[in-house]
Structure formats: C-alpha cells, structure tokens
Image (cartoon, rainbow, N blue to C red):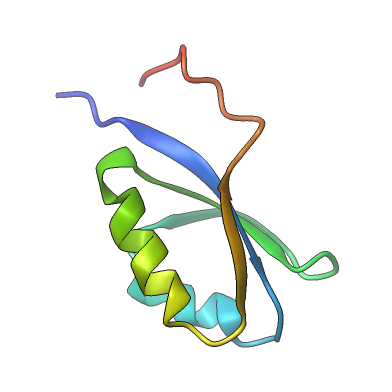
Length: 75
C-alpha cells in the first residue's frame, strides 16, 4: 500500500514553535532558524487537519505546499 505524501512549508515566528510541531502528524525534513520556516512531510489526507491544528498554535504565520515537491513520484 502506497501512502500519498506531500512536502509542505510552514512559516512561523518565535523560537518555541518548532517544539510544538511534535504534536502534529508530520515528519520534519528541514528547519531554517534564520529564515523561520520548516519543511515537513505529511499524508495528503491529513492536510486539512494539519491546517486546523496549526491555526491554534502560537507563532504560526503560513502553510503552503513546497515548490520542490514532484507529484509524479510516489514511493
């Protein structure tokens, strides 16, 4: 069974935001402390749930699909 996963970019402000991502069903791939963003991988079916949970977190600024993600690949 193949899981349809996608890469997302989460923009934030504040230092403790990344620690609060542990409660979400995402895998952190890259974290840029200087630019204040995190690249995560998650299942496509959980996208709306993740958006709702992110809006409740302090320091959340934005959420978008990564431009580097290639939809033609499926592992």
